[in-house]
Image (tube, rainbow over the protein chains, first blue to last red):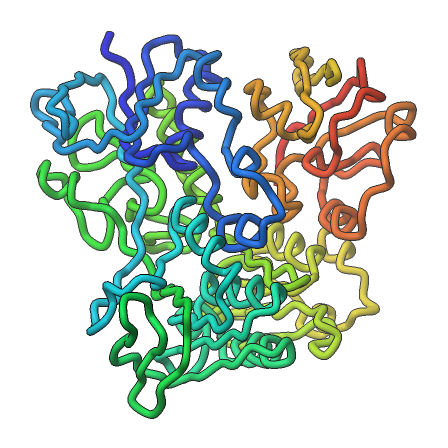
Length: 401
Length: 106
């Protein structure tokens, strides 16, 4: 038996290995990851880890000893170069070849790069890996003015941490509003006002043209204005890592195409996590998600199917973001709603926006409102009375009975 | 360090060692105890690490925070024994604790 080979060593990879062992698989499991660390969680990187509140050990998906004790081979610093789906082999950059019975591609995604004049200067960072954040943390200690290119969740989480640490923070957003790709104008406005109140300068419609500096960045040039900055974080989205799959002739289209069992177009080859493009039977469309809960669930589905099960992926996407002391929990996609209802007080920074389509709940954005998030999780796709939703004196529990 | 006994909904028992500086959730996940998903990794954001702890043991724990309380409040399987295991640190006081798992995580 050749066992299961997993390419990638992120959360999806670690969960696949854990689920296989949990479901009593006793064959070989071999993980290949190109980073030096054992699988770690990325969400804390732009939050508590950046703020220096937690250690590297706390970011690990499971303690290092776990893999040894469960007989899971983890090859770190090892880049896979090629998959041969006809021979059921993978080969690494050092030309070692490994056979598999089942292959799981969990290659994740990488930061989208900004290639403009000056982008090779020191002091310009992306935020994707532990090492990225270690460099950023070191430089934050001496930096005075930090500029963040991109007003998405990563950028805004970094802005929150840096501003609490006392840096002068500027966020440059290309679009007409922050978070435009992921949320509604009302939520953008709320977060814009929140950051402004905390002293962060947000500039929308800012097209970054170049970086200037000797060997280290000292300013960012946009069409209208030049911003002084001795540290730059670029957070303009991520791209799925598809090249291995594409080169192996595996069907890809905005991600590695998989079915409800996380199977690709090649036999015994699965793809999970950020790199997969999968059907969502609840939303009735295909999605590629940049999301930990999705990676975890796809890992469970893949493990189950590898072991001969029939588990199908069926879950409502959800996301979270921590900025300052605000916890934002999002379920579904607000763009699916035709109308929205607010529950709670925006001014008190404790409110939820429910999005409805044909009077049914299709999404929620919950700011410091975990109860409302949990309600939406259970009533997704169900009819709900907007008046009851908006009435804070109405006990939500009654809706569940 | 504490010895923790997890009992699955179907009665299957798992006795594991929980390390100090970890949570009950981490002890379960590290030891492959089924029935605890912990999708958010311990941020009290997802409520998929729901466990049931009886009154005697519950008395040894800190009260749930407002966030934990709200996350639990609308859980259909909620009982007075409900807690989120990511919010409970392992301490020596918990030596021998028994923790029951619900049938489903939501």
